[in-house]
Image 1 (tube, helix red, strand yellow):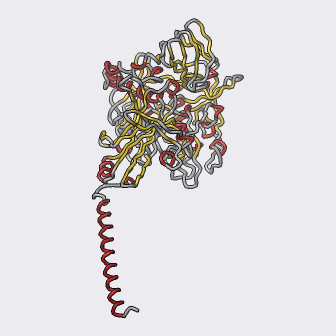
Image 2 (image 1 turned 60 degrees about the vertical axis):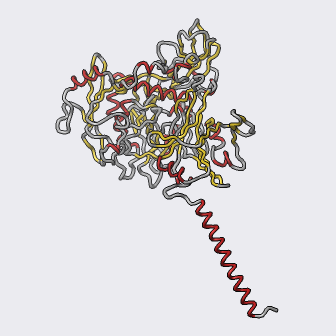
Image 3 (image 1 turned 45 degrees about the vertical axis):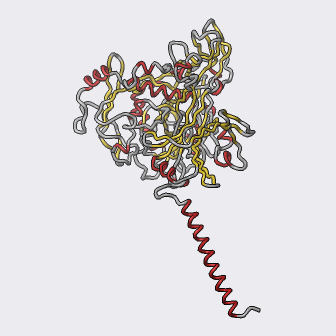
Length: 621
């Protein structure tokens, strides 16, 4: 048995050893912590913001000239430089590119890419070539070890080229991610999603819009422009003249408009001998051959702008056809760029208006800081039989009627329209899509093909019922200013007074703000009408918890609407307002609208002036 004195010695020794061991352990922990200590000012992966850029861009393969699509990830300079400074052993920046339908069925997220039960895989770069040994859903994965600084921000891109002909109208999506390695730990960060589902046709339209504007204002010289295919129909399927031989449009016009709704067919002249005709979904279209003319059956296309592929021995010929559309009325639309014409118009208009002296210019009813203001005027002038509208404002129109008149609260300057400058717009025929037609009475429901203007639904929302259509300012605008501007007296007689349904059913379900029926010549579509497949609004699912899109709801923005402050994306598509209120006890200020990609959204305020107008009406043809 140990003596008490020996026990004390042993306890003292053990205590000493315990203290030593704890000290050694603490030193080890301290050393480990110092080894992984982040430098001051650095950020780890969870602390940075990282997302995809909206849209997509052109990618041309330098080797063979083939076209493709490029997607881009984006990060601020502060975040990227702080992330690099953090000291990860490895950083990888990747972009997954896949058909958008894949993402709709199996979301392209961290679990499905890198998880235990991942659903996707991709080819790996091995010994100087791509090798694919997977057995899952195959996607494209483009990786790099760094981002590139562009215009003050950092970006990395991923692209695909050599797109098969059958996929030229297939929608693709780019999904970015960052992989960070620290010791044995591997973590991922997925990019915040963006509006970047695109196909080749859409990108071609965007380039055509951008290039035509540059040509008009002189910022792109003719030689540079010749590098691109200027024909709209060709740009549906090709970017530059390197691939023009494969996809060409023939005929004197690039957009063929059917002026008679009752017409069951349309003839394309001089396209050659067709072996097959298909629509944008590559479904067969019935046709009749007569010499080198090809007559297609319109019932196989539906309404709206459609792409028709006529396949001949020489290859494809892409035609844009506005099937089931008519022209009626006119409205200021295209901006005038011709300097001589601008000088003539300015001379005829005379002295510019001021708040004290309007100088025979007409004041436009606009708002700012929740009150009506006098800072925007217009004047219509005729030159050589063509009518033009001048627009002039000495302060910016805010994107909300509650905002002040400052440059940071408007979209007019973003759209290229500045204060104290007069701009001119040509009155052009309005094109209308035929949504329905009663052949017994020839009564047709028409919807404007484009966003023709921008106006608030209601200038303030402090009162209950601000989102009720019957008392809205937009209703007054449509049936007074627009109706009287757009149509001659003969055309006005053809427009029918309609009982406009504002009940709960018209809003798509239970709605505490449902209103009374109104009697109108011109009106906005309801949510129920804008989702009615029988009217041509065929929706396409976009994925779990993602609103369905619809091509017919995608609307381009006129130059005149841009001058009024309408929003538009890089494809020149805009948001346009519906008449249906959003139902919420705390949201008397919300209204339904169609977005740039053709989906419906209730997150629009009644006092927004950046939402476009797409009028509808019933007419007797």
